[in-house]
Image (cartoon, rainbow, N blue to C red; front, top):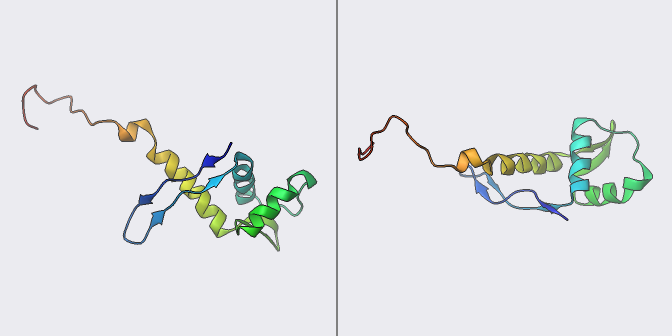
Length: 104
Protein backbone atom coordinates (compact mmCIF):
# COMPACT_ATOMS: atom_id res chain seq x y z
CA UNK A 1 0.00 0.00 0.00
CA UNK A 2 1.37 3.43 -0.95
CA UNK A 3 0.42 6.70 0.65
CA UNK A 4 -0.35 9.74 -1.40
CA UNK A 5 2.02 12.36 -0.10
CA UNK A 6 0.25 15.47 -1.40
CA UNK A 7 -2.44 16.66 -3.72
CA UNK A 8 -2.12 19.79 -5.84
CA UNK A 9 -2.20 23.03 -3.85
CA UNK A 10 -1.44 26.49 -5.13
CA UNK A 11 -0.33 28.59 -2.17
CA UNK A 12 1.00 31.57 -4.04
CA UNK A 13 2.17 32.69 -7.47
CA UNK A 14 5.16 30.34 -7.59
CA UNK A 15 4.42 27.67 -4.98
CA UNK A 16 2.56 24.62 -6.24
CA UNK A 17 2.68 21.15 -4.74
CA UNK A 18 1.97 18.04 -6.78
CA UNK A 19 1.26 14.50 -5.65
CA UNK A 20 3.88 11.82 -5.16
CA UNK A 21 3.21 8.25 -4.06
CA UNK A 22 5.62 6.64 -1.63
CA UNK A 23 5.45 3.57 0.58
CA UNK A 24 4.99 4.05 4.34
CA UNK A 25 8.42 2.45 4.85
CA UNK A 26 10.11 5.03 2.63
CA UNK A 27 8.28 7.87 4.38
CA UNK A 28 9.45 6.48 7.74
CA UNK A 29 13.05 6.37 6.48
CA UNK A 30 12.82 9.96 5.27
CA UNK A 31 11.43 11.12 8.61
CA UNK A 32 14.08 9.24 10.58
CA UNK A 33 16.97 10.57 8.50
CA UNK A 34 15.51 14.09 8.58
CA UNK A 35 15.62 14.02 12.38
CA UNK A 36 19.06 12.44 12.71
CA UNK A 37 21.61 11.47 10.05
CA UNK A 38 22.91 7.91 10.30
CA UNK A 39 26.51 6.89 9.58
CA UNK A 40 25.45 3.33 8.78
CA UNK A 41 22.38 1.66 7.30
CA UNK A 42 21.01 -1.79 8.15
CA UNK A 43 21.28 -4.35 5.38
CA UNK A 44 17.52 -4.91 5.41
CA UNK A 45 16.78 -1.29 4.43
CA UNK A 46 19.70 -0.86 2.00
CA UNK A 47 17.50 -1.40 -1.14
CA UNK A 48 15.04 1.27 0.03
CA UNK A 49 17.89 3.70 0.79
CA UNK A 50 19.39 3.10 -2.65
CA UNK A 51 16.04 3.81 -4.32
CA UNK A 52 15.61 6.99 -2.27
CA UNK A 53 19.18 8.02 -3.16
CA UNK A 54 18.52 7.50 -6.89
CA UNK A 55 15.41 9.68 -6.64
CA UNK A 56 17.37 12.39 -4.81
CA UNK A 57 15.52 12.14 -1.47
CA UNK A 58 18.50 10.95 0.63
CA UNK A 59 22.27 11.35 0.35
CA UNK A 60 25.36 10.00 2.06
CA UNK A 61 27.27 13.06 3.26
CA UNK A 62 29.94 13.83 5.85
CA UNK A 63 27.51 13.17 8.73
CA UNK A 64 26.24 9.95 7.17
CA UNK A 65 22.96 9.24 5.45
CA UNK A 66 20.47 12.10 5.69
CA UNK A 67 17.34 13.42 4.01
CA UNK A 68 18.06 15.94 1.25
CA UNK A 69 16.21 19.21 0.71
CA UNK A 70 14.07 17.38 -1.86
CA UNK A 71 13.18 14.74 0.75
CA UNK A 72 12.37 17.39 3.35
CA UNK A 73 10.11 19.18 0.86
CA UNK A 74 8.27 15.92 0.31
CA UNK A 75 7.75 15.53 4.07
CA UNK A 76 6.52 19.11 4.29
CA UNK A 77 4.02 18.41 1.51
CA UNK A 78 2.80 15.42 3.50
CA UNK A 79 2.35 17.65 6.54
CA UNK A 80 0.45 20.25 4.50
CA UNK A 81 -1.69 17.55 2.94
CA UNK A 82 -2.69 16.35 6.40
CA UNK A 83 -3.31 19.93 7.53
CA UNK A 84 -5.59 20.75 4.59
CA UNK A 85 -7.57 17.53 5.07
CA UNK A 86 -8.44 18.36 8.69
CA UNK A 87 -12.24 18.15 9.11
CA UNK A 88 -12.27 21.36 11.15
CA UNK A 89 -10.74 23.28 8.25
CA UNK A 90 -13.31 22.10 5.74
CA UNK A 91 -16.37 22.49 7.98
CA UNK A 92 -18.84 25.28 7.38
CA UNK A 93 -18.49 28.36 9.55
CA UNK A 94 -21.47 28.85 11.83
CA UNK A 95 -22.15 32.14 13.57
CA UNK A 96 -23.86 31.36 16.84
CA UNK A 97 -24.89 34.96 17.49
CA UNK A 98 -26.80 35.31 14.20
CA UNK A 99 -30.57 35.49 14.37
CA UNK A 100 -32.62 33.24 12.10
CA UNK A 101 -33.53 35.04 8.89
CA UNK A 102 -30.94 37.79 9.34
CA UNK A 103 -28.44 38.37 6.56
CA UNK A 104 -25.09 38.40 8.39
